[in-house]
Image 1 (cartoon, one colour):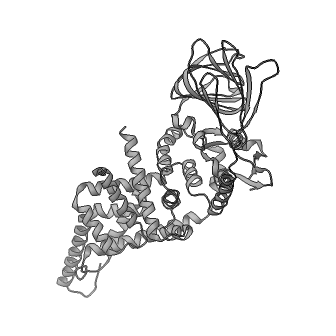
Image 2 (tube, rainbow over the protein chains, first blue to last red; image 1 turned 135 degrees about the vertical axis):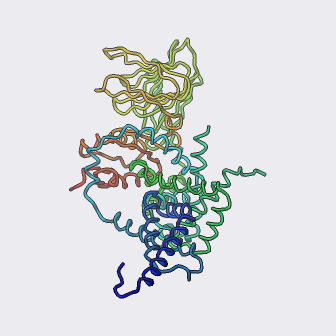
Length: 186
Length: 324
């Protein structure tokens, strides 16, 4: 960065401030990296997307001015991650709604892969777990986790409060996890 | 008092936090509380990450499994409510449809025929104490002449729990296939000439009396054999007891089966049979579960999985290739 006319001392002061800012961002990012990625993974349902958005958060923070006036840098970090992940989810929803020509033909051509049967066995634990739950609970869960619909949309479709939808989803998730663990250690 | 074990309790906490953070805009106070929980114990973070990983794995499950979940647990609402009405009506009628029973041919009192109605499973207790659970839309006859026990499965599906008696072999004939009990519970499904035998207890001996090879095969609990007329030999695979006779719990389960076979079996449970207009469609492979109480919505959802369109008529449904 060139600032014609600025003094040598001034440039070095800018550089110091910029260096201090980068160091601060880096320290903040490293201190909360695991939690940040966990937060994003939970929201995005994709470890790769979580890493990508975490990088985006980091780059945005670097590009920002001084953070010393921010009350809680950590809160700021997660708010930014929350907003960026929401943007990411919305872009993804738009992409999913855009029709493509591929799937129909692919059905004829792709033979059922070998690992299919064993995957079915594995997923049958989940199917069974979902059958053990009240219909509303497994319905909300499939709509949210598989179909990717947000709590508000499910609440509207099922005529429930968002809080109840969240409760059903969390309950089903815990139950599936228990059943999978149970199947792993007979 | 039943105490919840710590691992279960932790899993529930983790799932609860996971769901909270999936709100569109989680409040700052909630994020702070979550961070405090994450930092309180290394196991918290680990359990939380496991929940996220499971959510991701579920979203990455193969398309046919996901479609099965959608069809079984989140079918289109309109269909679901309409079916509920129909189910309530059916229940209120309390029809004790037992399937008709026909006495044997004149002159023999050892032969009996049974046929179940469409949509109606039926239990049959045989004179020797063996029990047959006959699937809907199925027909079989029994012949208990002295010295032997013969069952002929003419159509459909049946689950046999046999009182073993080596001196009186219990033999089931299903088209080209002959199944002899060796101390057993087993399921036989016949779709035209195609036969699938699954053993849940003990073992059976399978052979094809008319076959050139004459090869016999012993099938043990946890195994399934499929016979297809042009295919020759039996194809053996492993099978869980739950899958082998899932139909007894109102679920028809299929793994890699031709759509034509799937539809033929679903039709045994549907008063509005499905016809496949285009034979190419019948060859498509289907894996999934059909709940016999939601056949209507399952059929409606087929175009999401297959390149088909569904046309409904008063007494039948036609599946044809989707127009491009």
